[in-house]
Image (cartoon, rainbow, N blue to C red; front, top):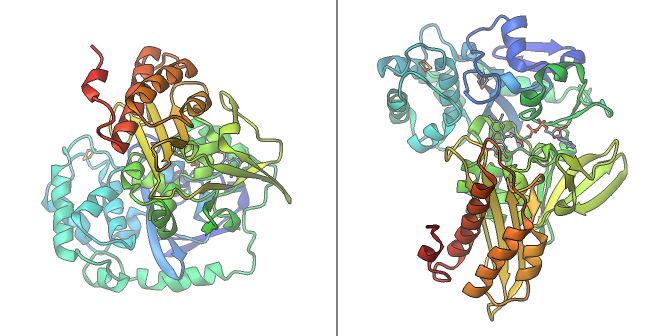
Length: 473
Ligand SMILES: Cc1cc2nc3c(=O)[nH]c(=O)nc-3n(C[C@H](O)[C@H](O)[C@H](O)COP(=O)(O)OP(=O)(O)OC[C@H]3O[C@@H](n4cnc5c(N)ncnc54)[C@H](O)[C@@H]3O)c2cc1C
Ligand code: FES
Ligand code: FES
């Protein structure tokens, strides 16, 4: 049985329903219609729920878009809808939305209110920056956002500072009383003897967060009887072993963003994470899903190619390791055998003294958009400025997420200089094979990658080239 707490009610559903989208379950089975069905693609946030989970003994909530969230991913968690944070009258967030004219047609409003409640319950400091970050996946067509920002400011003024306890949030009029009981109830659910739950369907399609599959083929997901990877504990670890950082394929982008292990090993990646979709999607999207989806523009894929990552593929007790750059064979074709799944990702932790790493992405909108072209570059120089190692990856310039082997071969062993960069640009131009599509012409993508490579070089060494000489006429 799939078992979870929905607002104040413990719910059981059969394993046959494991792939039902959570919003459909809410609206059709439970007749909870506060959250709205708008895009059904994770884009607008109107269906946002909070998902509460015990992590190292603490109850932490994350927002997710329920329209593309499989029911199975709620197993042994607390799911909160707009109805679940309602009081006798309006709660304080709702009141601020009313007082500041933060709602007009009202379609987006429940999703905004739930996301704002998420900012109070995610264990982070409560300030305006974090409140705005928490609504980065909510779209409003009516208000122009300023009134919603003001509502956020007033909530921060009232309850801002260090993260607040659930008891404080109840006393201050943000949450209903039943929230006091949730931690104990989740502990009981998690202690249940049947640990296997819904998660044993070895031959089904592998399903992580669902953020690709539920957009690509929502109908067939219901019939496919997926093998749910999202909560498999052996796929959720983040650790350091020797010189490597290793993480399980079901670790989400949000898990990595919040992970001290990851942030200490690869500091300064906040801007990179902000370029990845929205808070809700990052909380659901697994790294394994990004790699196996094999999109030529997958951001994490390009990041990990730039890190020269290895992947571990498993089938029962059998395992094999390969470099990620050798995994992609052709458009959406991978070296993944029948019965195999992606278990783990590993890469060497860059040595901060000698290694430079940078990620760049160009899209039609800076945030909440997929890339036209993206690229990552890792460069290691010796004391005499000779290139000891270089890994360059690029998305949107060929049928697969591209690791530029020929450009690497050209760079390694050369002296870091303007002349070498100029010659590398020529090698790179001959190596890629972009096509024209909705995101731009082949010529435009060539130009973008050239500029992104220069951006990498300038971020590492701002005096290495005169950038004006590279501005196209
Ligand atoms: C609104 C929105 C915005 C997005 N923005 C971005 C963005 O900015 N950048 C970006 O790169 N992507 C973006 N995506 C795409 C998506 O979120 C990512 O590709 C995500 O990492 C997919 O992970 P998932 O767990 O949700 O994948 P799922 O949909 O669960 O699975 C994707 C594929 O991986 C396979 N799979 C999953 N886990 C395993 C495993 N362990 N072993 C073998 N196969 C497996 C599945 O069978 C499927 O083929 C966006 C998606 C949405 C809906
Ligand atoms: S309905 Fe738009 S994100 Fe779910
Ligand atoms: S109030 Fe109409 S979409 Fe936001």
